[in-house]
Image (cartoon, rainbow, N blue to C red):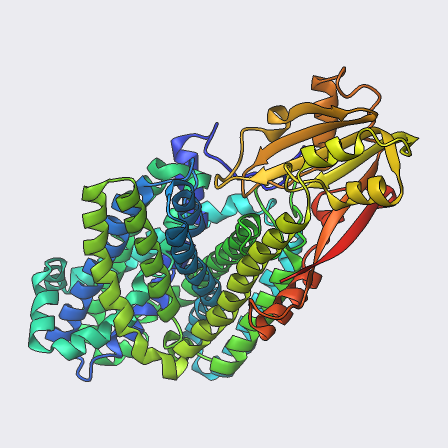
Length: 632
């Protein structure tokens, strides 16, 4: 098998099963927003009166309608990269269609910024979700308030520790648990709305419009907290390849959206009747006898939401590595049952430490609410920008105009979150900024390294022509395989043997590949092209293929399939006995070009990246790595 990041696709699964699965994976984050969102929104108004509560509730409902229903479900999800969605898939699609190199650079800048901010937000999401659920303990037993933070720390630590074993054995429970969660949200909301049915008036946008007209500044500032109700919307698009648009759309309109609307209506109705409930409107709606069961259910739901965010982080980093936007990290499958799951140990422990530090530092969901939303709105905005530019490139004017119009709404929301930066919003922004510098440095540094190699390494055809008739070449028995990501250039490991050692293997094979801006190539084992390259006494065989950015190369498997398909051309080649040569370009500090600090950062990242032997899944006892320095 040559590729090991195979997604959980919708193939072979019923519509009901897909919709249930989507509940547990796609909607965990946005589905747990009622735990803390309304509390933050109501905290934006100095007076808890009927007009303010109804105006803010209407704003919440119509923000979800615009951002999730219209933007994500209606527009963004209509554009996929061979079935895959998400910000990086959109960037890859744009890179494939754009004809201007300058446009590609600018949009890569935007895409990297969006991905970095998404990763920065991943530090906050598990913390605020689990903290908000654990805070229900103060409602059930006020004297137990001191245990909220320790309990949240234990739960989150357990979530990150269990990442290494995967969720294959319990993952099937995620959907049913979230189904019960949304049912409870709706049921509690219906009871509260029945006691004050006038709250149904807020379904009309006139309440939101009137609230904004009466106090434009207050309405604008409130959007900074209203955005908390759409955090997790990006998961609808990111998980498009796992469940497909129909299943996600059915789940959203059939259950999730109605349940969330009813939940927010119920919280608003309760607060209007009891202004003191604004301190924690979610648990205020819950009957006293149901507080403990709902607390347990809320904790399970937030654990599921955290699991989805962590898995999404792994996926983004893994895809970024394939697109050349981030160093390759050691990856493995934690579960045989779920082949699409991927586990990045370094990312897991780094993220885990950061999340625990955030819980200790902020200590409450109210304090964390200020840190939440800034990066989310910016990530949504970058996605809209990429979509709009792609629509223009593809001459889809209607989509471009619609995206631009909805993008203006998102821009207003993003602008309203800027004031939250000093009070906590700096955290995800700072993490995102650091990751942006890392990703941009890696992308630019690799490009400079490629240019340096291209200037130094001769074309493969020229090397064969120049050395093929040399009389002093000594042939040695066995098979030697040279691996390179540039099939047109001569690997410097091959040049070293030919020019320095005057040695040519009896069976010399060059395995080359290029990464396309598609998620996965059509099984690249079968697409490998086998081509003999010979001149005089020098005979080589070139095996070349195209990979998707989600694919990972298993060189031995690819070569074995090539031998089976072309037994004559590759006669005598035995992948299990071959010696493998990996040409490893090493960055070297140089004057000019990148700033010195950026060169040093790239060199450090290059040392930290997964080594090529592991990346290509080669046998260490039969692999030689030949390094050569190139100026940055």
